[in-house]
Image (tube, rainbow, N blue to C red; front, side, top):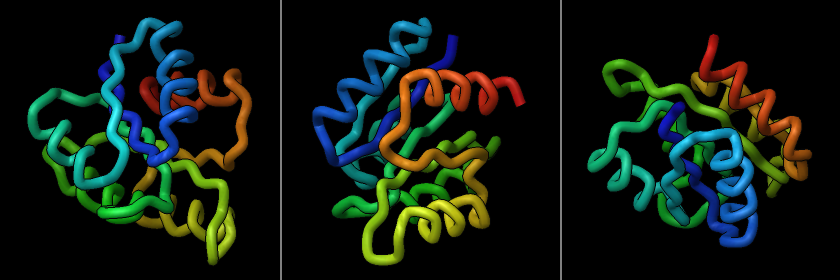
Length: 122
């Protein structure tokens, strides 16, 4: 299966999402912010990045830009529960910047599973 890097500053949500991904047979790496995510991606082969948008250090939009410049580009699912611009604005920007797919928080485990399958196989 795939190696997936999950980036979110919410420890509980990160653990729940990793549990779902692991139940699908994927290997997961966890990062609490964009800076940590870049370091982990440089030390490990990553097939997919699932990132929150609003985070300290480097945010999710910076990560979308970073991972789309990689050779080959790494597939990205951006997720957000909102913020000062609102969820749809952040996710729209992430999609325009190259995110493969977006998810609005909160989402169900089944939505996550479908998003991951579609992104990896597309």
